[in-house]
Image 1 (tube, rainbow, N blue to C red):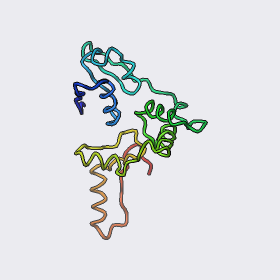
Image 2 (cartoon, rainbow, N blue to C red):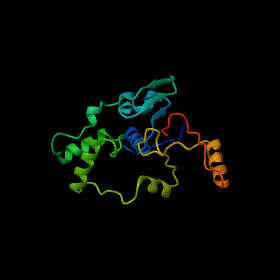
Image 3 (tube, one colour):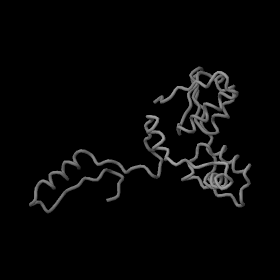
Image 4 (tube, rainbow, N blue to C red):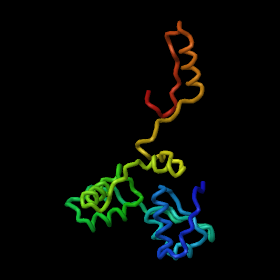
Length: 176
């Protein structure tokens, strides 16, 4: 599903970087462009963070995912330039789940280079009228919603004061 069409400002010095920054901020999975000329014939730049799809010719360029070791806490105290570089390298990561990005972010906050926002990303999206659903791989995502039959069975059990048993159907793959 296409969510956003991006057109960088005409005078922007790095239109590809502008679009990639927006894509990372929106946590997209893929970037779709007309052809490789749109990304300055450098699909590798896009594939560092996202899957790239071209319309002409119809081609999919898979995103390269860093190894888990690349996300571990650093083994030394980061310098400010190192922390800034790590934030750029891990732009698609969430600090809640990437220890390396969390360390870099913390270092830049302590150095006064970043002022943490006072609002959550969900609150900032709401102010702008942007929906903010959890990503499927999000560890903070809500559990699956029971099906209609389960909800009706619960309501029937609550409506009958003489009922001492309640049959509840759990969806496949849930603990219960």
